Image 1 (cartoon, rainbow, N blue to C red):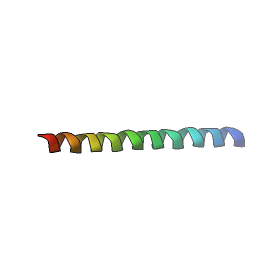
Image 2 (image 1 turned 120 degrees about the horizontal axis):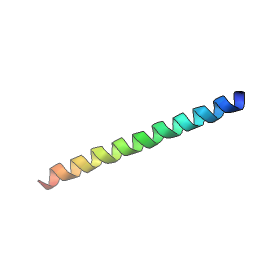
Image 3 (image 1 turned 90 degrees about the vertical axis):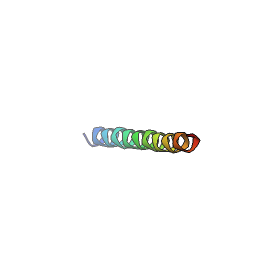
Image 4 (image 1 turned 135 degrees about the vertical axis):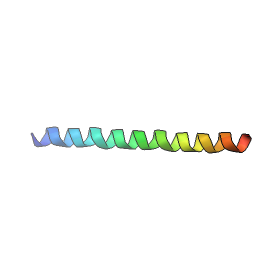
Length: 37
């Protein structure tokens, strides 16, 4: 049971890190596009 909770926590934290990376990439991409125009 404890191991399962650790696995779930790892999956959730990985998802948050992945989403954070995607959001950061989107923000940088929007800034670059705005600079070009």
